[in-house]
Length: 201
Image (cartoon, rainbow, N blue to C red; front, side, top):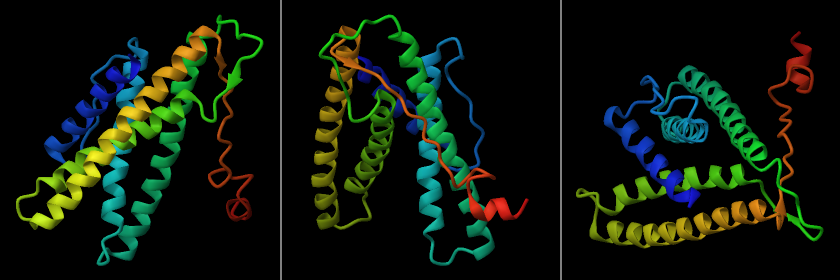
């Protein structure tokens, strides 16, 4: 199943990040570009992992305002990278299934495969960090117990989401579903579409 591979890659990325555990560490993709899907999945989860830690840092109530602004810009750039990677992954699936003839009664899904994969990558991060809390030795027994209950739900959610993604891909391959991808068309990063940026030109 596709998601077995994706979940293993996501876990590998998260483990690799936490060896050094800093947001400014160098990135090296374990997969060459010719292994396109694995290459994209690895990169996607790395972006998500770094951004997860950006979001932790910026919530420090004692953060220097100048440093916070710099970090906010990094988060904005990371969000754009994340969206771009989702679109690259969807392009991979569009190419893979381009010769599939959709059945007359084929339906479209509420989200594309890659946006489901995006949620799966973030879910892997939630599971990793909730597991840390559920096993944290300096936390109270009550804290660990509460986090273990949340972890159990997250693990169940991963099974359900993985099943849904694998089912969607199988349905697309059989022609029961069809892909139609809308680019995100984000406006706030565009010099012409963001009125604040436009006035700065």
